[in-house]
Length: 479
Image (cartoon, rainbow, N blue to C red; front, side, top):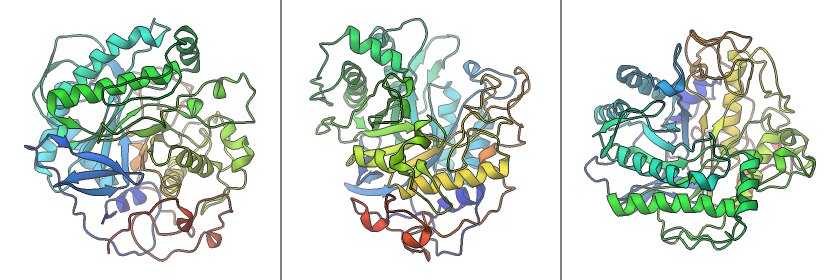
């Protein structure tokens, strides 16, 4: 049975004071750092699950994305210190985050910090979703990046197992990696948000790639880009298993622009519905860690998020919310695969780039409202039956281009000035200034058991998902 006691601090941090509910103490111990072989984590009934003694323990995963562009530096400098990382891990757990998502290889002291922190906090460790960055310079054809990307896969796998030696280089992690953090790595999200033009180019120039007979991840049928992505995932699974005897959940990073759903309000040649990458038909018989779909999904972008008539009548506990309808459709398409929202949130920029029917706009919020919207989106992710979500982001990205509210970038010391966002004294996601009480909710509260109204009582439409209509059993909280 799973417990959600750790979610309560996140709800408070994101701006809501819940009703009184019985909560159990956290009892999810860290895996033994000595036993790092086999399948430590897998996917079950749409959720992540820890594996121990052939028993699975499913859990709803919430965490935070963490960049490295601290004030006065650019992300490529990877300037985060060991001491700051240790301090941040504690703050993240105070907020309620169970895991940190990183996008690329860090310097060795990051892995030392993870190992040292978790050795000291064995009863409540910080877990990792690790990325492998796909470069986006010069080469238009993704196929031309295959060898470089595969090399990055090897480096990152070796690094989490404490067995990498990388010479000095600029803009990327390097050094001697001797700290094994693999027991706390829940899964992999490799790649980045691929552009539709890159998909079109690869599909047009490699039309014969329509299937992939992989060693661990066969793809019976797919587009050339889907074949290429599957090959990279298969290489990761093969390399980690054959060199370290370990496997874990895997995914390729994506965004709504490349989702497999139809968006009828977009023009046939629209950039936002031009291409798709869909790995729903992967054969996972030889990959016990499993595959999960990952999307960077925000409630305000693309425009079809709020224009599609399929979701115009969807409501949550606050009011109209097409975002919830979109998440439900993603779940339905990928089921029985799990779906993770790898990024979600709203910026606190002065301007607003996109309006959302839900009011969760692309900017124009103060930190109090940002926290309220964050709590609402967290509830949406849970109510949609997804595997979890990662708040974007732990800190303001000082390296982001000023003037764009796409990321919660602030006017950081050393960065170019401009009308971006009001810089908070701490990470926006953990601002304690908000104490907003949410309205009635559908089904069981996501932070634990408690009194709750049926879907109709919460103002949810017939198009919305009720607990009773979920296509799978939902793990219950103890208490």
